[in-house]
Each structure stands twice: as structure tokens, then as C-alpha cells.
Image (cartoon, rainbow, N blue to C red):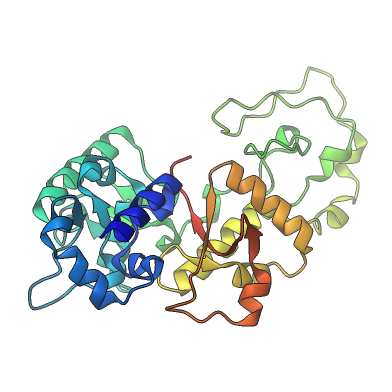
Length: 322
């Protein structure tokens, strides 16, 4: 029990996708089997301070990857977290029915957590506050869905006017770009400065041209094809690679560094590590080690890891507490 509680506290400090851990992940972190971990959580001492998001008993036991383990004092915070919403939606959705009714999402939870979670969902809709990966169709029976499951028309992602493009910066703030991440040709032309984007990162409309003003000739030159080959920013490519790999592995929000490096083969290791470090400083992603007891790492997985403070970090998880 002391080790189990210590692991929960350490995962809580990491935040984001690390807390609450799933029952499966908790067993891995404590170095015990699922059976031993589940038995420990059934002890009176554990029940006094630890809560399972789903009841472990009954005829149909929930999959360990769908059960979150949290400290009882964190019930309110977890009920309002992106972490619980994503786990519940992932477990409730079906390939032929990816949108899930709000009333379905709390059903599998223990009553104490389910009641607060349902109220938190209703508040999210009222405040239009959702994770970046999830959308909702409001109405009498709101439907939650992963954006990756939605088919969006091309009209929703139009090319921005060239005048709104801005030069690359190093602060990693959202920047207007063409849909494929290409650098607009007009960026290299002596065009008038673009209006500043609002602080929320929303794209701004291009400023109207002054009467009689001439259009720079560079806008109509055939320079665009060469610029179109420019790669998309690392952060956008990394986000896309993580989402695809995570979905392919069951949506548990754990992807190996080996797989991510393989998905971006043209990015040198030093550049990859530096860009990933920047994403971690922005609290967009976290890294975790593996104790090797429940999954024997291949040499390629170890080689792809990042060594920090004596720990070999091999797993990447997306955070939602930025």
C-alpha cells in the first residue's frame, strides 16, 4: 500500500495524461501483476483513500485499461478533467456509432463519481469548454465524439489570405498557415505588413487595400510551387503522428518514442529532441519511463528513449492541463 500510494502521488504531480492512471498502468508502475494490484486496492486501508472509477466486481468486469485509480480527495477535480472524459468516451464509442449520448458517458462509473461527472459535462457544454480532441453536438440529447471520427468539409479549413501570414517565430504560439503547412508565396514578397492576430490565436481578416494601391508583382509570380515543398512545422506533424499512433493502439494516450521517431524519419534526432522538449515546456506532452516488468523493451525502444535524471523515458503522453 505505501508503494501504491506513493505511485499515485507521483503521477498526480506529473498531471495531464499521467493522472489518474488506469488500473493497468498502475500495476505496471508498481511492478506488480494486475491480480496483486487489484487485491491491494480491495483492502480496507486502500478503500479509505483510493477510488476506482468503475466497480471491479459484478459479472462483467471492466477492462483494466478503462478503470482509473484516483485518490478520493481528487474526485471533484477528476470529474471535471479532460482525462476522465476522454477515457469514458473512448470506452463507450463503437466503430459504427462513434458519437455517444451524454447520458451514456457516466453510466459505467461508480455513483459518487458519475453524478459529479454528469454535472461537469453539462457545465462544459454551457461554457463551450472541451478538450482539443473532442466535439459535441448540443441539443436535447447532446452527443460527444472524437474530432478524428468526424468528416469535416474542406470549406471548414480554407486557405488563409496571404496577407495574414506572419514570419515564423520561436514562441510556438499558433500561427496562420496554409492548410498543408506550406509557406505562402506572398510571404517572400514586399507586401504590406499583416494585421496582428488576436491573443487567442484566431486568424484575422486581411486588411483592405488602399484605393489605387498597386498589388506587388511577386504575388502573381510562379514562386508558389517551390514554397509548397516546405515541411509543416514540427509541432503540427508531431500532433498528427501522435494522434494516429494513439488511435491505432487503442486510444490509451501512450505512444512510444520509437514509433514517433519512425513516423517522422526526416527529422534529425537532435532536432526531434529539442522540439519535443519545447512541447513539454508548453505542457502539451509528458514523458514516462517503463520498469520493464510487464513489457520487455526491444533494443530499438531503448535506443529511441531519452535519458533524464537516470530514467530512460520511452513513453509519450498528451497533456490537457496546459
